[in-house]
Image (cartoon, rainbow, N blue to C red; front, side):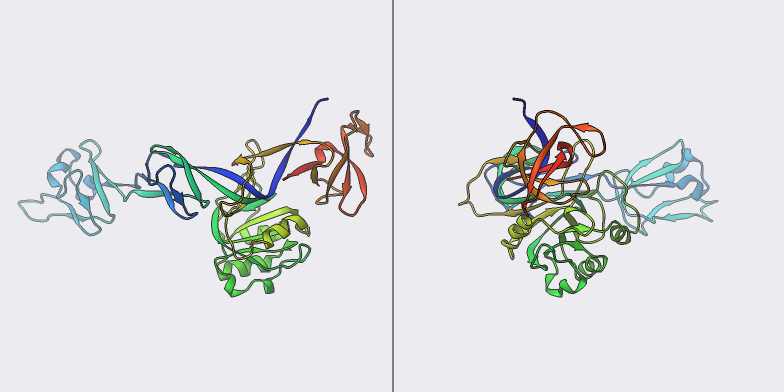
Length: 375
């Protein structure tokens, strides 16, 4: 019998996660294989060349480009600070000299006899890669990065914005169907990963920004609220570079949707524990899900997974989430997998399955309308 595969979200109490922390360009690795690291430790660093500041110095000094070298008060490779005398014209009989004091800081990189331009190179821009998870370095890629392994509770969401964030978990909503409102966000939650319930409101997000929360996690969000927070309609296939303050993660979908009880229970069980959060989402090729990673102590044992897309086999007993109307957001278990395509209410034919929902209702849906919630 052929197997049916479908993408799924990972929601697990314990797994061994391996993350690859790679620099965008060659640099230096600051840790050793076998070393224990904390989530916010810098494990690798590189220097991106600074910005270029071109100056048409020959024109400013009213001198010929070929004569510019004789006017320079700094040599190529010299450090230049703002206000330093960079060049001075010869003047007429030693009088009427024109001086140029630098308006930028950097290193003198080039003086052109052809164009009369001078190039200043600004300070190198440091690029640091943090460990992201608390764990052990299990592999080193010299000049590029590391692989870190950690035993964690691991939860993937449907959609998120914002980049990596770190902080202790603070529970704002005690039940998964409670709407996250501004009054749930307390000043003492500054720097925390805030756990909501159902939809996170625009006012709640604004309050989280105001107090300096690290992240906000809840079941759903209204599309208009998201637009109000960002100031524009997202409308893109990849997120993660937004700079609103806290990272936001939606575990179920858009609208007034309660967080899955299992997900809410798992997050609440780790109240006060440190968590790493990444809101980056990619919904096209190379699917990337937002995630919450909670390090566990090393007494836990589990299978190892690599960071990335989780896929699973559809079979009876597997837990799935329905991702199309009219059952969007409902969770249940696969009951049967009929082998033959069946005619749907729309008149079209499709491969289907039956799902027994948490309230006991059994429904028939196309296989394309579910995603696995992986253990």
